[in-house]
Length: 75
Image (tube, rainbow, N blue to C red; front, side, top):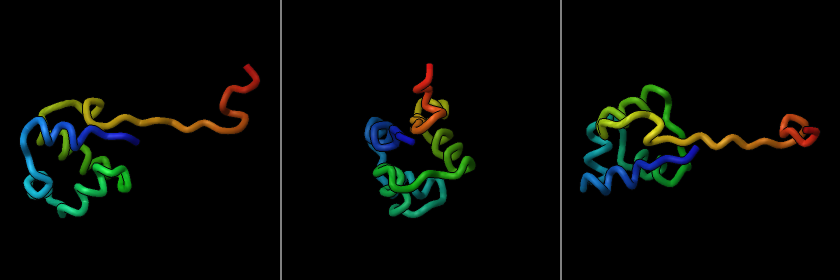
């Protein structure tokens, strides 16, 4: 899952520390989220979008990886 947290935060001139404070996590969590090394719970994702005042699809993009028979190779 990709996210635009860093972009949205930069547009608002918000530090990682300030975002962390607003959503109740550590700065290290924000770093991990921005690097794509940690995926937020649904509750945390909604806290993030509330801070930015945007929709969930404006922050998070799910990219489905398809391998094997369900990939539609037989179509």
